[in-house]
Image (cartoon, rainbow over all chains, first blue to last red; front, side, top):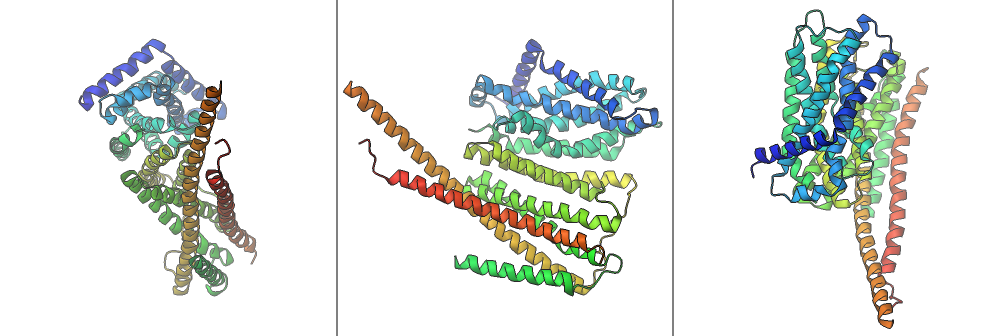
Length: 224
Length: 241
Length: 50
């Protein structure tokens, strides 16, 4: 079976699982919302400050939410040993990883689509005229988070203390994504919004490097 | 054993002469005076760290390709030595910065990136500690190690791009520019000394890890014999019944 | 040399890191060696159940 088709089937399985249980998306959204609210206690969000710190806070909320949300990706395969079943299926290892990556991308993007407007309302940031450009930045940044995070979820699933381990492994590696995404978002949330080409190129570069690395190394993660 | 004694003596000689040179032979720096001498430990430790972490990357790739245990051992040894060197750098840096710049730390590009680097390789070591089965441990940490190494230039690049857009609180005018020839020679001696000493630590750690693999093998063998004996006893007992 | 205490602390820190690390390796090594000696003995001793 080809990679694309297998990945689509896995993607379908992940989406159906979530549709039935509806626990991952809801908990992720609520957690991200809690983080956003907590920030308001950390400093006094007057207009000037939110412009400066807003993008950073938004992406930190997404990063934290993402690193918690990515854990079940592979961890729940351990529960009924569906992991062995998946591995012994006659599909390329990358297909499994890709399917889960796409599912995680959809979940995290949905979280961001719900939360970004809420954030802008709570901190008085206008989305007028920047929606599509912001969506592009969100997509590229989230792809970076999810591409690396899915691989690390596979890594952490084979270790102890995986809920604590995944953020520990993931967050230092994702600092470039955080910087690039925050700067790109900050560029959009100014009086004269501009999509910074440097940072967008950087995000694209990061995504390419890590998706390629995942493709090259996935078989080692899948073996027993 | 003879090699070890010889190497230790060379290490002692190097450290002694490097220390002496750094403290007494090197000329006094115009503005920073005594504190500048911290530089003779600071820079060599970064060089040693860079070498150790490059070795980790090579070992990780080599392990995935060959599956020979020695590469896994080399990987963890390199990572521990690399983290130790990075720790030295991160400690000596602020000790230099406080008297010279007046502040312990600044979030400039290089310092931030190096702090992140330190965290990544600590995560590597923690990961190894949390996987029990040796085969899986080796494969998984090799994969993570490769990802971490690929990320290093991206971390430095992103921090560089970011910090040039923001004004720097202090200018990092390190004494690397226009180095006095005597200072240069002392620095070289210190680099050799620290790299030698760290290489010895690396070899020791490598040997320890090899020994640990051997011990694991023995343990497995002893356990299987134990269970065999128990089974035998069980069969004998049931036969008696 | 009023900044001497910083220089001194830095040197001591370097030595401390290095020696603590070497010491921990040596300790682990000796513990491992004694464990291995014990295991080897267990493997070679005559089995009393036969």
